[in-house]
Image 1 (spheres, rainbow, N blue to C red):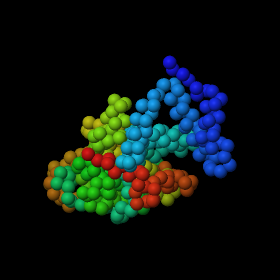
Image 2 (tube, rainbow, N blue to C red):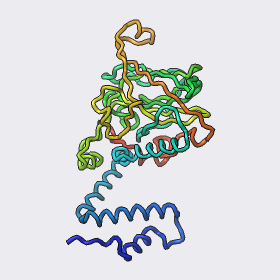
Image 3 (spheres, rainbow, N blue to C red):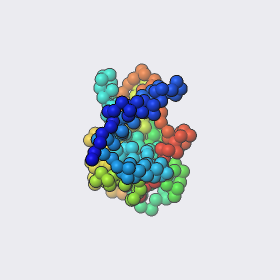
Length: 323
């Protein structure tokens, strides 16, 4: 027989005690949030008649997620990262902060401190035997179309096997990671390789959660960006390369129509020679539009644990996010 006890005075008083409402110390906001979280979970247990076996199975998955530093990997898979973007989009609309290239999720695989160059940088170390040359370029402009010189364009992406340097120990330090400062015309250019999409490791805790929902854990080929300049809103975004089977079926919900870019394959030897290349290559053009702002807090990326940027970053590393 199913019983429900959530609304009883005993349970409601118990929740207040667990959340520390009867204690003078602690953080009041933390208490309020924990009380709400526990209340929602207690009610869920009551409403779905969750058994002890089901509860402890969930605890086991949480333990595995922590042991594998996969909370940062599961977070976008359960839509949290995209939901935060939706809230920021709504806040911009309410404040009439219109214009600019759309944001999308950062993901857990940024590493601070990538080498910096002005105008042009080579991102790959030339050691990927399956890497197809990519010529990645674009212009950073304001919403009136005026080029922004000196903008900082931070770029990172996976290799031809879907692995990221730092998290993939087989790659050299900062492989496929660079910061390019735009030239006098607001342009940036990078020589790199076409990235591959990747999937969460088969059988890992994240994979188990997604499979329980009848979902896959695949991401399409994509390239991450941070773009910033004094007097402009910081932009966190990424582009998806058109033609990938998962472009519009991304388990991390990062795809936006405006951010799907068609690469142009170029086989003309003269065009390759102009760029100091040999053989065919793919040109990917991504122009960026930044919106002006006087608010200092909008000109920098939000604080969060990031590799080589904060001591807490270990929990965000998602080190197994590779095929």
